[in-house]
Image 1 (cartoon, rainbow, N blue to C red):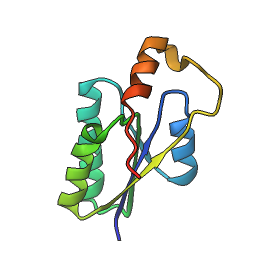
Image 2: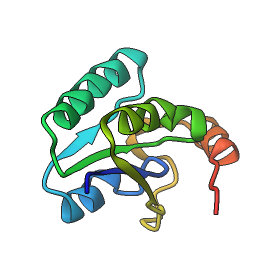
Image 3: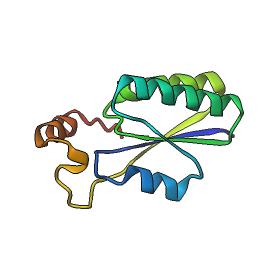
Image 4: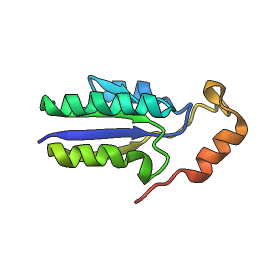
Length: 113
């Protein structure tokens, strides 16, 4: 069985360290379109090699942010899991993000139970 794990959460939630604890290799999605396209290429390549587990860490605010990964998973026959990582560190504006940007992310962040 092949698995795609999407680690998602707000900046400052330690997405990368958490994903790295659980997965051997983690693809990190940047904030800009060029970075996302490059990451999709890397994920597609890993899936084409038939890696058993492919993991990706990024904000993934809503369904549309994850859709390209869902499509790749379906094409390559991967089951998708999403893991929401909470920000419990107490950092209010991590990674130089403005409070306004963080509030926008918080308001837009979608969780489907």
